[in-house]
Image (tube, rainbow, N blue to C red; front, side):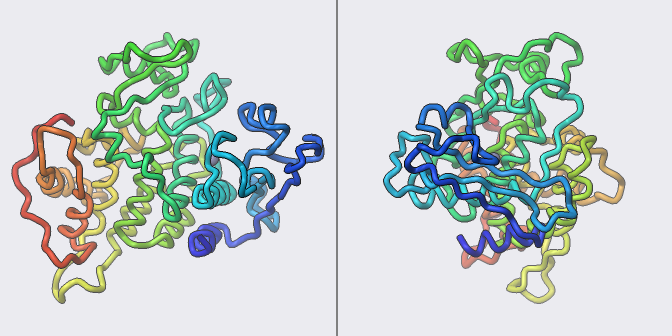
Length: 379
Ligand SMILES: [Zn+2]
């Protein structure tokens, strides 16, 4: 945990203010707390206890990059899981790292959102939700990605999500009749893409099967970007690589005109290109630039079939210098799909590990299997 925290703090190289609230007796009035007084009614339901939250300071001349507010009740060893979950030691550490990342990375909302809440009508977000604000989903995702390096709850495995074709939910929004639909009108966009909603859902939300959701829309789910960034760190074996990418991309990530994931992704591809596996055989070449693309492809359900789709997933226009993007679609992607052990089910298994070995990012005692014909299964 100390390693991850140290690395995350390298993003800003600044102090962080941590406010520890004495909310165990639950008698202290909310009004004495500066931040994190409440979260989606949690405080009201738990005797005014504070739920962890954090913010980055927009004034970059301050000595601190941001602040975290956490109550003693949250960290109490006897707090039951029923009190909001995240009650084991490993889970609490995960939440702390998540909040710490929020002090390092700016949240810049899309101007097209207007008065729409970034989280939707209910004002909250969960792991199986598609959020109106894609930048907000990314912001939660990058925070969770570093937290996953310390503790990965099994239920957050997206391999399982895809295998089970789990249901994602979307808050109902009003004012989404216009065509073409604005970025945040996800149901309208799904209808336009001929994706049918599931019958069983709630009165305030619509539900869709994960594998049916087009790649540009699934990026509105925070767990997707969390897994992409986590897997990038896993495959390259480095948190500092992503830390450096974030530092390099921060200026572009601060612009509301950008999907904030896009400038970071470009830095990841550049880092991959510069990566050389020190254990690789002399004379061999490392093709790390393909790995971020393969990881994005994998966690968006293998729906990024060409450069144009990738451009729409990231809301970018690729310039001619990104030839590695062309190479991925013309040759390497077939290799990745060939590692699917069962083309008729969503059996993704260890494909990314095999692909990382194939492009010489990882050394394995056993070589990756030769790629077979492209899978034609349910993707
Ligand atoms: Zn968060």
